[in-house]
Length: 312
Image (tube, rainbow, N blue to C red):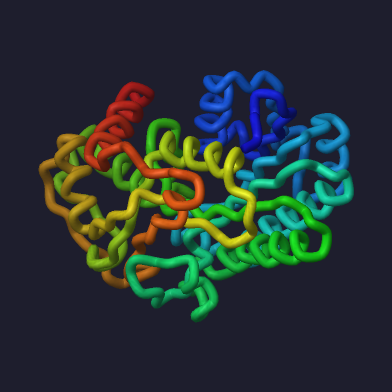
């Protein structure tokens, strides 16, 4: 087990949604030496900036959360950018970390790594059984290459890197920008806006039949820390809550929590994305004792309350 309190830790993406919760939890553990490279100062797609970041941070441990990502619409508009930026960030950060002899590299993958028609619940062994869902394949495959790199570097160089795949995150502090937000914040904002503007209808993409699993951000942060402390293999590990809910049910719960009482119209000309998404989380529990704790409706309620408070 690594005692993170005695290590210099660099958290890429540490100022973002997941990163800010992770940095807070590391602080609660007693980690006093945490370096968060700000995007304004370090463009981690560029090798020069990556080298400068390593010079400035001098890390023992790197936790790589930084990603260029969005919902279905943003993925569809930026396939090339999402592939290139995510691949170059991850590949170069790992290679530079290897050259500098860092102690451990924790890479965050994505549920988008999985094939489009993976049987539910998704098991890590299913990762290579097909092509990812088309709208997010460039992003998912760029991240998946970090798993290939992690395995290859452990085999050839003995480099200690791990690859974690969290399912869709949600919680206080999420991205509510309609151009790039994921489904939960997008729906919360849509419902609040409709209530504020006195609209009696909201339009939601797809059919509502697709299912998703949602993972509270504080649970995710805890899982990443536990894996960084205790997991030292290159096999990918799912991080999630181990349940699924249809988008239709999700919209109904959010409408109730936000006070929207109008009509929900489904725009079936728009894609559903991956048909089903739910993880088998037994490997995380077996390997480093992680289990999600936040009940979904409670987490959703906290997220709605947080957004209500900042929107006043």
